[in-house]
Image 1 (spheres, one colour):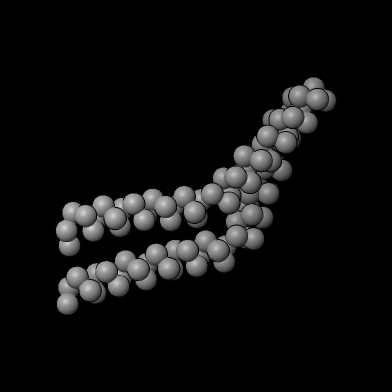
Image 2: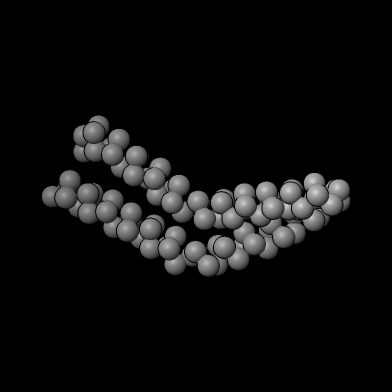
Length: 89
């Protein structure tokens, strides 16, 4: 395996990591932003008001996007294994 192939695999793995993490991170970001706006408008400064809804919605988004995340990881793993098999043979 050459350096170029290793760099390509590393680049693909970073992209897969971003694709897998993005749905939950964006959900947490959106919920946090909405709750911050709500707290600013109502002047309620309760810590649990931020934590509990964000936690619940992040877990819900993980369940919702789990098939997408799993398929992305499986496709990446198959591509890496195909490269390993092609390189060793």
